[in-house]
Image 1: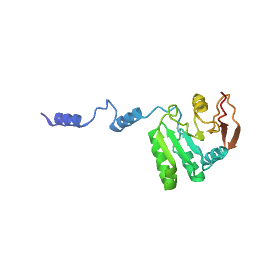
Image 2: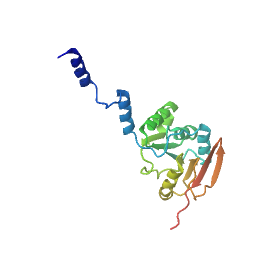
Image 3: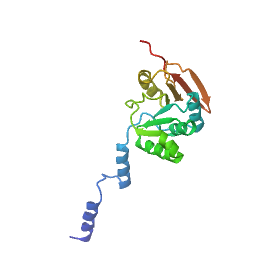
Image 4: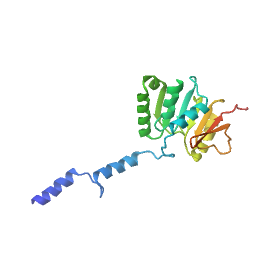
Amino acid sequence: MNLLRRRFIVAAAVTPPTFGLGFSAFAQRRSEESRPTLDVPFVPTPMPVVDGMLALAGVTRRDLVYDLGCGDGRIVVRAAERYGCRGVGVDLDPERIREAKANAAKAGPNVQELVRFEVGDVFKFDFSPATVVTMYLLPSVNLKLRPRLLQELQPGTRIVSHSFDMGDWKAERTQQVQNSTIYLWTIPKRTS
């Protein structure tokens, strides 16, 4: 067998089939294929807006803050740092949850003990224990979540949304923080 042919056979045996893609492009495509399809892109809420959301909700040490679509965990971490309350963040993207856990670790053991982050779908996740729910989702996602929020949260639970309202459910209060509008609703008493 000639030397050129032998090199070709050896190279073919050790190179994974990429069908025209380089190995790094092949690995990137595989990684993208395994990532979840997100309803909302990750855009971090600026810290002054985070502080405004928590203040508008009237968060106290007794609250349990759930952040739906928590991204890097900044709202839950800030609530634990500033108010000493417990918090739960949920996001569909495992990469964001890794970041959130790392941010909680950077904030120290006191914060880490108060917060929890989970990979999950906000449309299936149990957020019923919350006393405060924070969101920075899209209008269509807010509207889709609205029936669950009204049915599953206890009366008196506060909901704060960054930038987007909930259609014809009028917010009790709105506030401008920097270039953002934040909205507050309270789950009403149920009539039987």
